[in-house]
Image (tube, one colour):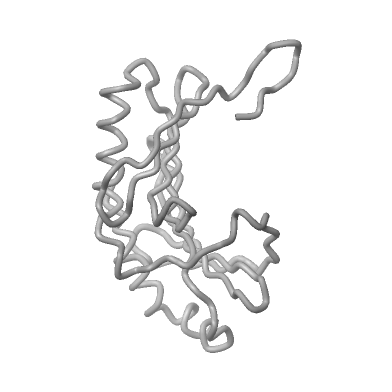
Length: 175
């Protein structure tokens, strides 16, 4: 995987579509970068900007080469008080995408060997625990392995394995 998120953000900011949009939306802040990785599929990146005054989220879907940019409509985002959206502090983004995914894969191989990933979801975001690479592996064992890796230091802050489905009394468990 060769998606450098920092580079993608910089290239996006230089793209005409983004510049035209930004001219009309001066107060927005970068709040996430999202990627879903599946074997054999081209991985693009969804980069999200939030207008804290208007409470609107706008995302830009870009391909690996940042040659194609699609804008999603601005949407109102509802958040719980405990889960406020926080801007990404780009100057604190020291650990790149590849290094974060390498750390997550090493942890999976070391601690969760039986849970082989078939799909990976990676989100760069600023949460209550800090600015993190929030990485979730969907596994062949129908579980999700979620890891939060500090985007500045590369330390694993949290790792949890969750069942996707539970067949107890026909109900799905919430994790």
